[in-house]
Length: 338
Length: 283
Image (cartoon, rainbow over all chains, first blue to last red; front, side, top):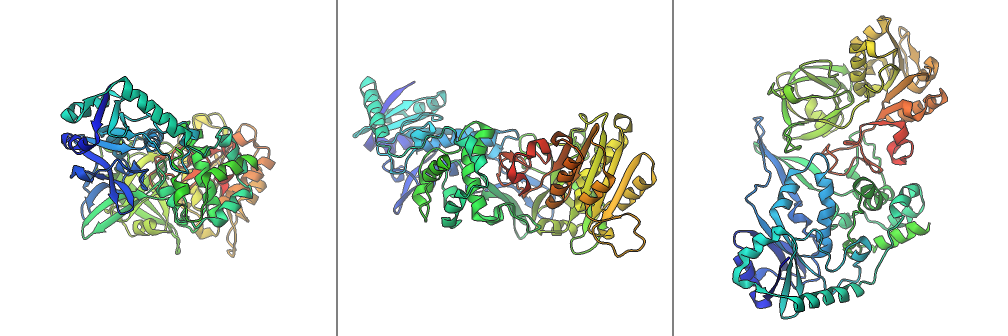
């Protein structure tokens, strides 16, 4: 669609010009970077490898209120995001954006989830192509890549002095027209540089897994010893799931303070025993063996069986942050060999 | 479904009547409820086997089968064992109190496909609750089905639910009803003593043009299915229900899966034809 460029020193002006949107962008927090709502444009940064917490939190917050009520009455007040809250999310890495296309299938399946869907509809996604993939990135094995566009509305490329901005969908027009003077036009030369950047980044991705056959094979390994090898090491901390851009499991809890109550949902993880514990005390996944098996099988077999796509984008977070170095690529490779 | 645009919002229902089915620490209490807004009935429609999230504002909600048949009009029934946080809070409620109901959820027993067949229900303990709407539906549509056989057992005589109805089944000619208790110190007990799978073998229903439906504790289901196969039932003639911890009830929150199936959404009703290849189904 359109080709533009933004000089790096004009990025704050560009964000400022988007004042009819809520703008979310990466912000430096100590040694890490996390997406936040930007009130002061100078706080946003596009100089980062990736955020520890994926931007799934912008569509599916860590904790959110489903509805409020007064304990003494039976009146229920829903808390679905309104149509007015239009947002621009700036600087999403292509893997994390691809995760939205995957999770969209779950939240849109049958009983559509209005909380997630409303935020997705209200958001314009502006990606940031990767020039320097991390050591555990394996997006190219899952159909992604350093400049993968699905489901982005526009994508930025860091070309040194400036960012090249390529718009992809009609939805991006609304924000391009708001950005005004901060955008300059670009053309063939910038487009060629962008293609070169993406190509060179792709060559830097060292880790791969051939996924063919894995979804079909995993169920046959249900009772296999090899799950024990991995689960013996697992501490059950759940970081692999909390920081996974496609993990979408949640808990629902009622909370009351005096007479004010809310029913809220919060991220949960299949790596915790309580997740599946029945009130009777019976637990169908009593040890880390069953829970590890469920995590891997859900991503690489159950989800694709149900929704037609593997629930992993190869971002490498579960490898990077595992305290005992459990490596999903190793697990998958082993599953093919046993 | 409640609010078509928001499946997380419950209906408010008023408890009309409650009674205890069984005594003890893990007693079972039946709640007969009606929607606070009677207009809900204009759109409400459930089928035998379907469930609902039943809850109490300020405490939470859990999934229960709707133990009344759609042929019973103007009320819903839930029979709930006192077990965890939500069920303890529900047990504190009496007629006049309000609960939340979100549903109907899940699939149902394919009773239309079963027309013209003999039906055998095999229940254990609180597992009779999802079978009750099947039995009542068939009794209300007698002309469409052949013979109905109700096999039901519990740990002791006091642990049998729905006793007044069982008494009717025992007395009437058109229903075969056999009861069992695991242990019996009661000289007046004139029925079977032993486990439900043994009661099944004692009765030995013919698989000819018959569907067997079994609900109860997982260990009972496992042996009932083994025995049904011994009697010549094929996997597609055997139906059961699964249960797991649930939060959303609509196939989103993740926890109730057995293999690639969500018990809340793809179930709770499954034929053994579907489950026999999913080892986690009986975990």
